[in-house]
Image (cartoon, rainbow, N blue to C red):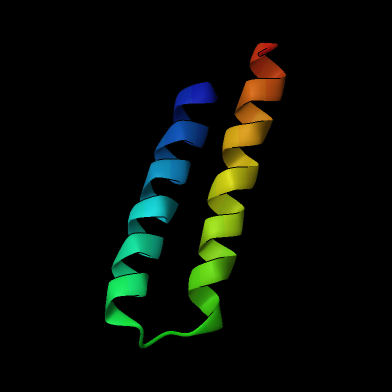
Amino acid sequence: MKNILYIIAVILIIGWLLGVFAYSVGGLIHILLVLAVVSILLSLIRRGI
């Protein structure tokens, strides 16, 4: 389960970076960033930091 969360987080961060450079999607990019950060935090909390 931890690996899946990390993979999702990495994909979302890459998507956010691509969106920042493209600047065509708008607010969706920031939602992707928030989802990536939340998934990283969840994985850290479940692992016990």
